[in-house]
Image (cartoon, rainbow, N blue to C red; front, side):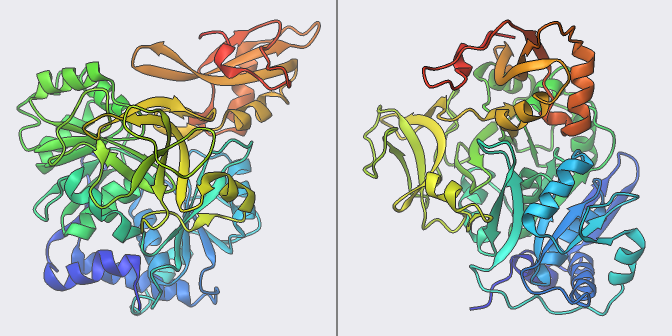
Length: 492
């Protein structure tokens, strides 16, 4: 059976609602709009151009661009052509981008401006324009289990690992449309994230397209005051962001019930929603705010929403149609009863679950227990089926919704001049705000300068991976077998 993710998002909409606005990309004052008919045609034209390059079906093509329309079109066109899209963050430095290309075996890279990626064929702005002028092709006759896109996420190693998703991933998102987003074809979805982020590609684009709704994305300067203005200007009915954006919005005088009058509700994911922030949002705006728990390997699968009342402090319940269990921390496939803490697991039959980790069989072995995928979050069910979180079983950090490996940051800092030893951990600076904190042991006689350490990290890591706090110590706490005891590291 033929099934193409891009075709699922665009073809039927182009037939049924050709003149409806599919996407608006705004810089705040200048808007670019595409109807479903225009988006479908543009994606298929670019898909035809990309197909002319002679790349093998399933070849990985990296996207390294800023927040622009060509990024969105490239993502869907690659999938439409039967190629595998590899979205990357515009914040990545050259070293990080080159690693992704090498690890994935990318054949080409679609880049903006003067950006390049080592070892690949570069498709710059001029060539992209040429490829976008081809006669349109049909959507590739891919199968549901054929690969569609590859995303890189932090793990417990010092390098990100690729998470490969199938064409069927769009089907796997179906439970969240009703039970978290409450998405209707009449909705206008405004998403606050950068286009490369899977939260944005999914909730900001794929989900509205799956329902025939309209999407609005912002490509202007980051500023919390812009979101209430955009909600009012575009009459957005759903607003999606990480909790930090809602926290910043509430400090803005423009965040008023009047400016948010068009909203039916807002949704949040990426990090835990503090009960105090939820209460402040409700009091200030009078609008519901629905939380979801997800991961790169499956997107969101636990949530509150129109069908699941919000319970402060809990991300909600497993979405109907999902098989979710709590498994023992020390192994085994038998689900635990309510009020017993263990690891959250998702049944591997879920269509939204990844195909696997790209060329990392050892990493796959660690996360699968028989028929269950175990993601590393420790939690328990209560008697009513709500999930209550108890942190991570591993050491992954959460930096404004991005999961960051401490090992990756430590590997960079260990090569900074004057550093004898280093450990990195997530630390709270307020009840509802956590940052990346680096604990540094100076080399004998070294006069370490925090500014120099910040410059070193900025040269080798994306900005969101950089520590925000530095603590200098004489030694690091370790376990009996010599591993860093991160829970015993000093507070920021």
